[in-house]
Length: 145
Length: 116
Image (cartoon, rainbow over all chains, first blue to last red; front, side):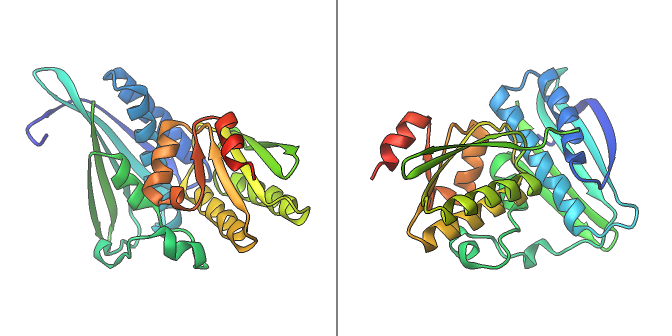
């Protein structure tokens, strides 16, 4: 995947406002459809985009209250192969290694039942990278056609 | 911008079927929970969520569904789901919901399996 070149790229900036994640899914859907990704895979990409955006909305604490997305179609010899989506915020960041993996057994009795976003993204996408520091968080997630 | 969740309830004896239409986010999840708790107060302990009209959910909405599962377990009741999109079903499996809530392909199968 690393050797693939960028065939098409779209950037989108959304404010951290309720339901704006749906606007991001529309771009994801268009890009995925343009590379002839199957409908079930497109649906999985949409769900992962929703989760990455609401994670930024809920947890980043970014002063600019914006989320920056890049949708890139990667391929070799002009043939689209992979959709790579980058979701970035300029918030406080976090240490992914300090996050406890959620489990249904614990969440059923816990007061806080949330915290599933990354687990869902990792379950739905082929590859997920998280880069986070004091200047923000970037989630890079990819799915092959 | 998004369609807010609408909800319809069909009471069938001891079973209540909740039909959703639209996005299950935090507001949608709260709407379902409010309705589910009213039904439980009426004595209905078996609830079936028919998600045929829901094409997208988020984890905040699903967290509220987990609260409903917790409440049904407390009263020896059941919460089940049917007519999920493949992605919503996959997401429920990723989260482990299937261990505590039945997931059925269609309403008929769900009703048959949930019958006492």
